[in-house]
Length: 471
Image (cartoon, rainbow, N blue to C red; front, side, top):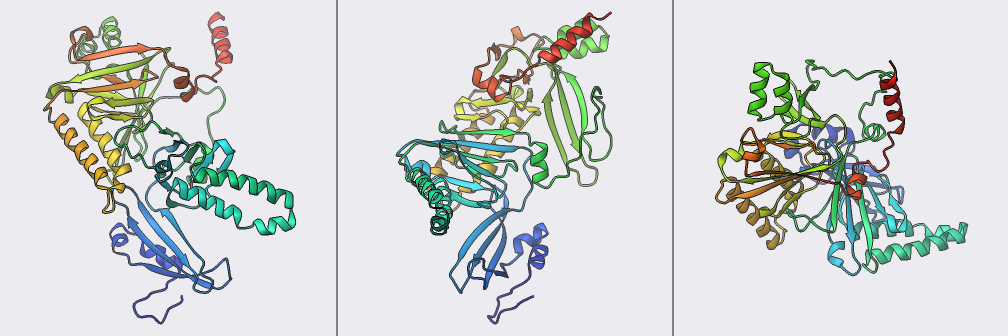
């Protein structure tokens, strides 16, 4: 442990600094910690400053800044101290030529994120640029500086390679200056990265986001304990409810049973034909898997929904006209493949956002708004432009009017896998004038996003047909 002669300045070792920032209450009261550390440029000792803080409505982060008084070397880094998100995220930003305002968009890059520019076949791996809060231009120019740093040595050792890098740097620098159009891709398995959407909560035609399940390799890279699969080939999956503390409880329900009065009546009477007719009246008879997790120790509760059964040939678009208080209490099943729109709010939610949930109409809108505030809320600090603040205030005002039913509004759930559901107000869909269900043929882009274009089931179909033909 080292100390300094300046009064009030405390220099501690890394272990002590980490331990002192451990608790939630202590984290907010933890002072700035300074650690003596080696400068990789000159070899003398510099100072690293650590501060754990909370960005409002966003994440807990650890800010780190290094400075060497001997050679003037300085750098900074951001590491996320909070939890990993349930899914990974992939942002794709189209940057047109000459629009420098797009280059000024804020980018939150965690230390597990990869940045790609497909037009140059260029990739910044997670270890190349650690967690940072920057802009699109800032990240590109930092990559240029880092590649330029060793060019003098490369020219002495390998002139041809150095010349090729110079040509590449000229192309990369032109992108940072807005002289050419390109695509900026930010892929983070931890789900803690972000690209600013100035149009939020409305959608941005230049920005798209996709949420995905992490692979086993990505889980292991993030520090999760990944156990090898224990199922033997040919084993049939067993669906049962687990009552072990902390494990998810898995239940299967016929799709369309939520809110079906006739279905419950038929079940009570024990008429299988009426059960099938009632439960399948509102939608296709595929299954959904509802997973609920509870912890008796801390009270944590979570639920998630996954579609089961075969993939339907068509997608489904559900439109509900919300006019009264009963409409707000309608049961809603939103699968993780469904997108949500509220035209009156100019609100559009991409498929995969929020995952699969079982809730009500009011609960769905509240969850969407909470997610928007969590992701975009950190932009609304003291330095935020007034027009951005006013836009969010107007959005909150319109949202309050909709939830208080001062005026009717429309909820649209578009699900390419037809695995979502809104409960009708009557036993017959024909009698519910506020609810409309449309089936449509999926586009090639939708099939590509769902992984259906490359899916080959010929072997499974052949095996199924063989099994059925055998006596």
